[in-house]
Amino acid sequence: MATAIRAQVVAQLDALFKKIKTTAGYNSNLGSYVFWWRDTPLQVSELPGVVLRDTVESTVRAIGQHEHALAIEATILIESSDSGATARNIIADVIKALGTNVSPNVCLGGYAEDISPVESEVMEVEHEGIKGYGIDLKFTVTYATPPFDPYTQA
Image 1 (cartoon, rainbow, N blue to C red):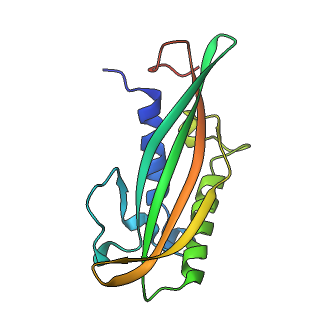
Image 2: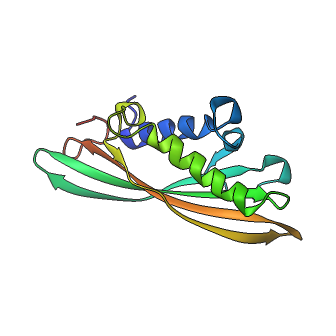
């Protein structure tokens, strides 16, 4: 059975986020706890952690292909003992990781054409009496397929 290109893009993003560890030259170990579409709260033992979602996908017709813009949303939580500086360093880690996958490098294993710059927001959060920081990130991955063929890369 063939795998949709969107699924390949998500798999590549999953692997990319899981590489964000201090042993790989990053400032955090965000890659230790990467989840997709998780609907239960992260536990303190899972911090810092990220929940990723592939949300809206817009598609336009181009000459001989469909160009897809897939919105990715990330919610990152860090412990209250960490600081706003930690939150900013984690944002920098994500930007660095994504940057290893844009031109002139191969983008997400060759499944994508580009990744947009990251939009971010940091906020203080509280859940069940525990305070911490939350980071919302958004970026877009673009990729192409032949018209009405989501399983083949254009």
